[in-house]
Every structure is written in structure tokens, then in C-alpha cells.
Amino acid sequence: MAEGKTYIQGAGRIADLPKGEVKNLRHVFKYLKNYVKESAIVLVALIVASSSVLGIGTGLKYLIDEGFSKQDEKFLDLSLLVLLLVIAVLAASSYTRFYFITKIGEGVVADIRRDVYKKLLTLSPGFFEITRTGEVLSRLTTDTSVIQLVVGSSLAVAIRNVIMLIGGVVMLVATSTKLTAFIAILIPIVVLQIITLGKKVRKLSRNSQDKIADLSSHGQETLSSIRIVQSFGQESGEFNKFSGFVGEAYQAAMERVKMRAKLTAIVIVLVFGSVGLVLWIGGKDVLNGYITGGELSSFVFYSILVAASTGAISEVVGDIQRAAGAAERLMELLNAKSDIEIPSMPVQLDNNFRPEVTFNNVTFYYPTRKEIPALHNISFKVNPGEKVALVGPSGSGKSTILQLLLRFYDPQEGSIRVGDVNLRDTDPNELRKYFAFVPQEPIVFSDTAYENIKYGKQDATEAEIIEAAEIAQAHDFISKLPKGYQTFLGEKGVMLSGGERQRIALARAILRDPKILLLDEATSSLDAENEQLVQQALEKIMENRTTIVIAHRLATILKSDKIIVISNGQIEAMGTHQELVKQGSLYARLAELQFGS
Image 1 (cartoon, rainbow, N blue to C red):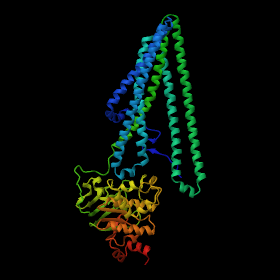
Image 2 (cartoon, rainbow, N blue to C red; image 1 turned 45 degrees about the vertical axis):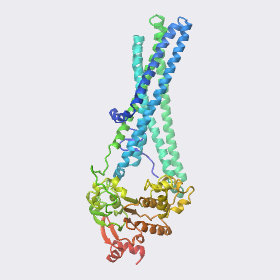
Image 3 (cartoon, rainbow, N blue to C red; image 1 turned 180 degrees about the vertical axis):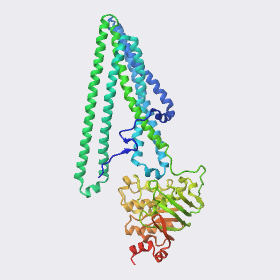
Image 4 (cartoon, helix red, strand yellow; image 1 turned 120 degrees about the vertical axis):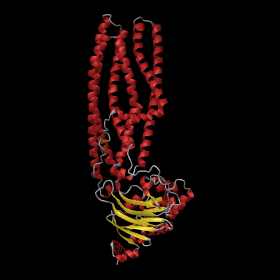
């Protein structure tokens, strides 16, 4: 089994988000216009909180000089009350800032996720043919989480620390120019170590995340394929592989922890060593009468504040760069263009249009296979109410015809018309309202049986849903489920057999009551008894309805008005069953294989 590794196009691992230009965040900031009131509250709270912290240093100076030195007990009592007031203001402003900045971050991310998902739903299948779904989902989840971190936390941290850095420097200079000059030499040394070792920690953290991603991906792949694993007796082998991933993740984590501990130790030595030197030099100045003890205490407080603010800002810069890279990739999705162009004035279809299908010299290449045509110069016509079958070997182009009809793709040459309307002149969303499609692999959503059938017609009544299930021969087995129609069917309908999933899909199509019905091997998953029952139901629903059927079992299409034989993307023959057998074509050989001489 291949190792499960997830990558993002042009950027490496999910955990290793690219550093982008900060200007890319302007796209994210556009979403802040919905949170002007909250942003103003956050800014005021930041200023108040930062001012409160800066005020503590000045209060400390007066406490020592006026209270301790002069042994003024009343001043000490007053200082305590002032300190408690400052703490209360700091707590209230911090609460306000945290609540509203988090609200903004969550709101912005929710808005971006909605917009990106809405955009993804409009992109043609051609986009997903050349773009990995895992990559798209990682942008929708991981990248937006990075943006949430910046907008909902890091940005406020950066602003707060910039305010305290500027205020702290001003207070340092006002307290002691001599000691400020000394600090100006020490701080860059401390910050340089933090930045240098911090980069190594981040690199090791990304490596640790990579290993965890490998572990998670392998576990997910194995557990989702548990039947294959157990049927081939590979439990021990898969456990050994997983243990290997666990070991690699452990080693990577320990390397990260070791470097993080080293960074902590070095920072403690440098920071507290610097504080000690400042106290030593400042202590001499106090003894010589150059500054007071309160001024020295205040200076130490502000110097620690400046150092901490500088380190915090350097950390935030990395987060902002990662968020810029994430924003760039999200904007790529929002700006992605669908292969299907919707006319500015699309032709409107209504229930009175003729359900007639015409392919005229259609040639089509898939986006990933541009050198070989999936269809070449295809022409045929399906009259209203006709049942037409498409027959041919796998990969001959049968399913492609249905996908073109639903306008998942547009042909490079030729035209496809429904009634008198060229599909290129229609809005795909409006066009598809008149179609119902049942694929060879039935799609059942992780929901109840009721909601799965209702998917075909959102405003359907309960009676209509039950009637559709009865026609599709699904009502009996649904009624026997633990909660009947309200039974949760599991992920992708795992609780159901293949035939039951197929009948759910048929009921969904029947409920839609389409003008044109498209069936891609719709009875392939059914046993002989149910196939006969469903075939009878299909014959009933196909009466007076334009239907195009793809079939490998020729017995299901013997009564078709027309059979089109397709080979290598071209029409080889066309006619009824009897006509095609007499022609001795590919169809005759297929018929002989299935029915005998």
C-alpha cells in the first residue's frame, strides 16, 4: 500500500505553508468591512490594555520612591487601590479585546469558507479532473485556519506589542538615557538568538507535523480499506508500517522538544543575565545618587517589556507571512475560472420545450487527455419520448456523451442541442433542472434515506418521496430499516448493499420527474430478481419520456427504439436490436457473447 502523503500544488506539504508577500492579505482585509464596529472596539481595548501595562511601570516607581523610601503607609494603601484599579481595567480590556478579535477571526474565516465553497460548487468537473480534491480541501480547512490565527489573534498581538514597544522605549529614554543605551546593545543580541533558534524550532515543528500527517494518512487509508486488509491477511504488515510512522513521528517530536528546550534555556540566560547587568549598573547609579530606586525598578520593568514585545513581534511576522501565503492560495480558488462559460443572456428553457437531443459532428477531448479524442465527429438524434441505448466497450465514450449533455464539459468541435437550443447558450444550472442522472456507481450521501431521495426534489412531499421509493422498488427495504425513512445510512451509504444504494439513486431520479432521463448502467448492481422489478419500474417511468441508457447487459435494452454502437469514440452502427444483429457489426459479436448463436 502506498504511503499516504498529502501535498499542495507548488507548495509542498500542508504543514509547510508558503511564506507569501504581506500584500496578499489585502484580500483577507476586505472581509473586515463586515466587522467595522468590532474592529473599533478591539482597537480601543488594545490601547487601553497597553496603556494599563505601561502605567504599571510608572506606578512601580512612585510606590518605591514615595511609599517604601519615605515609609508613607497611607501612600502604600493608595498605591494598592490604584494597582487594583489598573488590574481591573487591564482585565476588562483584555477580555474585550480577546472576545471581539476572536469573533472577528471566526467570522472572517466563516465568510471566506462560504465564499470558497460556493465558488467550488460552480466549477466544472474539468477543474477537479486536474486539481486534487485533497488539495482543495486543505485550502478550505488548513489555510483558513492559518488566516483565523492571524486575524483572530496574531494581528492583535502584533498591534498590542507595537504599542508597548514604542511606549516602553519612550519610558526607557525618559527614565535613564545611560541605561537605555546599554539596553539598546543587549536587546538585539537577545532577539537575534530568539529569531535564529525560533526558525529552527519552526522547521522542526513542520517536520513533526509532516510525520504526524504521514501517520494519520496511512491510518485513514488502512482503516477505510479494512475489508481488503483483513481479507488478504495484512493486519501484521499494516501494523508494522504504522509502527514505523509512529516511531518517525516520535523522533521528530523529540528533536523539536530538544530544540525548544534549548531555546528556552538560552533565552532565560540572556534575558535574566541582561536584567542582572542592568540592575548592577543601575544599582551603582542609585548608590551614587544619579537615579532613585523607584526609577531603577521602573526601568527594569520597561526593559523587560520592550524585550518581550520585540520577541513577540518577531514571532508574529512569521505567522503573518504564512497567512499571506494561505491567502494567496485561497484567492486562487476564488478567482478560478470554470471551463463552462455562462452567457450574459442565457436562453431560458421551460416545461414546454421539446425534449429532443441532437449531437452534430461533436468532437471532445478531456482536459488531461488532449492528445486523444474521447469522442470524434459524433452525430445522432434522439426524438422526444424515445428510448435510446448506448452500447460499446468500456472507455469507448458512452459516459462522455451523458456528461456533455449535462454540460459538465463543452465539446471542442460541433454542437449539442436540446430542442432548438444550443447547450452553449444555456445556464447549466437551469439546463440540469430538466434532467435526471443515475450514474453507474450510485451516490448515497451520509444522511437519512428520506433526505437522500428528497435530494432529487427539495420541495417534495412525504407522499411523493414514498411513491418514488415504491416505483424504484426501494420502499420495502427502507421500511425494514431501524428508523425507516429516517434511518441514517452511514458514510456514503455503507449500511446498504450495492443494489439498495442503486435503488435509492433511482428513487431520487424518479422523484425529479425529468424531461430527459440519463441512465448509466442503472441496474448493474442489482440481482436478477430486483433487476427485473426495477426494469419494470424503469419501463413505466420511461414511458413518453426521452431516455438515454448506457448498458452492458444487452437484455435490458432489447426494446430500445434505437441502439447506438460506439467504439473508440466513434459511432460504428445505429439501429434496432434486430437490425444491428443482421448487420454483423460489433453489436452482433456482443449479442452472440451474451445470448449465444
